[in-house]
Every structure is written in structure tokens, then in C-alpha cells.
Length: 37
Image 1 (cartoon, one colour):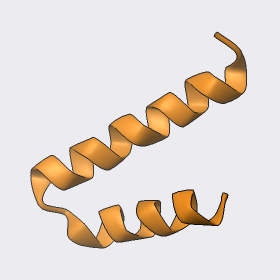
Image 2 (tube, one colour):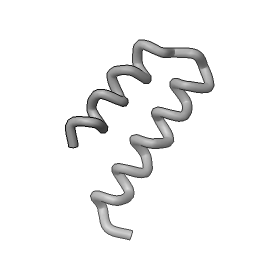
Image 3 (cartoon, helix red, strand yellow):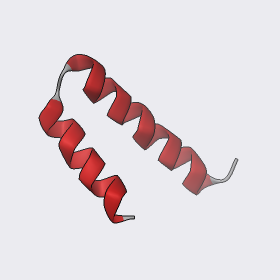
């Protein structure tokens, strides 16, 4: 697993954590970041 894929996997894990905790503001920011890529 290369470094970039590992980082992207961590980003997805962070998004899931935000969703589970109901932190929609952080989730929205993360989603916007992913959609720009």
C-alpha cells in the first residue's frame, strides 16, 4: 500500500468518525475536500 492510498484511507476513516459522532460541520468540510480531488 503506497503512502497516498494510506492517507486517503485515513481521510475516509475520519469522515466516518465525523458522521458517526454527528459532527456534520466537519463532515461537510471533509466531503468538500474529497469532491475537489
